[in-house]
Length: 374
Ligand code: CMC
Image (cartoon, rainbow, N blue to C red; front, side, top):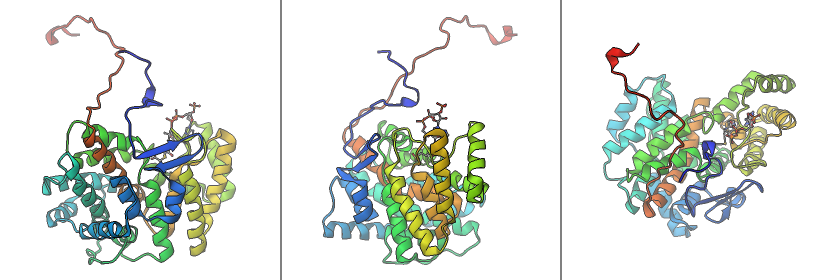
């Protein structure tokens, strides 16, 4: 049945899901029935991962078991470590991640077999992503591989793997909250890509490979890195007005603003703004925070746009010392939980995702043999 074309599938309801609800008018985000503000204030990334995968909050015993399991799955095979060493040091970390997830599928066949057992692959990938990123980042910096460090939460391990140091309590909690906020977001582009791949009965690792490639784009996960480029370009708060207005006059997009679903401020941005301030205060560096506040004021006045999560995440990561090109991979280290929860849901109620297009090209051209074409 031919219908109206919804460019970018805007407002198209593609499937039913029990994982995540966004109320774009009220600025609410719900994971499995729980408000993101409660989860960010009181939960941990491991607890949220359990919630998204299993559909309910864990008991203390279940939570402890998942945390131990994730910790036990961090090490990567020697073959993968060697492959990472062979990649160009100039490679983009998201390209490395995509290649590594794909390679892990070859090295660990069976982990992502379509069906409920692929929860094992989901946990394996979640645990291994920081190790993969850390291995590449250390190699490109000519640093020796890290010794395993037991007893770290996923958030603390991510910082350890990337920076080779344990974070302070405040830093660890800031990253934990950022991971909670990024863990899922309904049918965003990368999750949709994962579900499309899974809907063909392809394996979970292939679905995550599709998702990593999709998250990379600057209109999606790549925006956080570009926000920091904007802040560097602005330099000082007094220049924010001039730089932002000039960009808007040239019809350029201001990264970290606007959202397909939220018509008010992204609730994740509201929470991360506070963390940007807290971490800035702790580090004695509120420069990013003040710059961002000025940019928010100008963009809202000039375009009526609100900030999204990507506006603030980069400032938190930067204050910890995480390099800009690892921001989107940090996003992936959390969103892998949402991708895989959706892939599991897809396997549970599978229907091939295959929309149609409205063809607007010609239909009755006469074929001309190649030798006769001008
Ligand atoms: N800066 C300037 N203008 C904008 C922006 C922006 N960030 N976002 C939207 N607009 C304008 C756009 O130019 C258009 O104006 P006009 O009607 O005059 O041409 C209007 O708003 C509608 O834009 P759209 O592209 O049709 O809206 P969309 O729903 O497709 O866009 C978006 C959603 C996120 C792609 C867009 O807001 C954007 O490009 N933002 C910047 C990139 C960004 O921050 N991405 C992170 C999104 S949140 C995390 C994630 O999902 O990864």
